[in-house]
Length: 182
Ligand code: 5GP
Ligand code: MG
Ligand code: MG
Image (cartoon, rainbow, N blue to C red; front, side, top):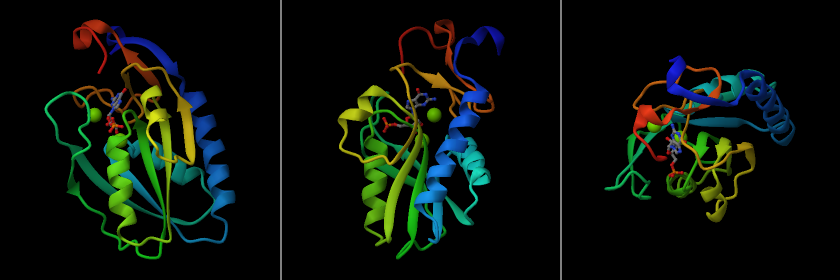
């Protein structure tokens, strides 16, 4: 791995500190409520596992897997559901847990989809947010870190299905992906 990594952007300690901070806010905001965490596979696996364990609230967890259609390397906003929820979310408080918001197209599609199922509420917790996402009219209640517009890996995030198990967030050396960004 060593020489594939350009730099560490967010250390393991910084990640875990932020997770505790987010969990404390979620505990306070949902006190007395029945909360369902919805993780978006596969990138959100690490943040979901750590947030869930940092919460004091009893929660349920479910998962969705989606993939963006589209010709280019960017999200098209047209999304296919690869794995749907096992849970009926009607009347439930839902918190979507995401790894990263880039264009925001995937998330805005997902939120529309979930809202059509009549939940009591839907909010979003995203560990990372890139600058593009700020232009999208999505109200993200919990954001871990605003990061520069670079392709990042680790802590659930992959490049060609590798690097997900790194305990920190880093950027790849250009020789790994042959040049410019994502
Ligand atoms: P969006 O629809 O917001 O453009 O796409 C979000 C998805 O693209 C994320 O859930 C993630 O799978 C992928 N993605 C966006 N930026 C990055 C990045 O910097 N690194 C990695 N590994 N995946 C990213
Ligand atoms: Mg994701
Ligand atoms: Mg990926």
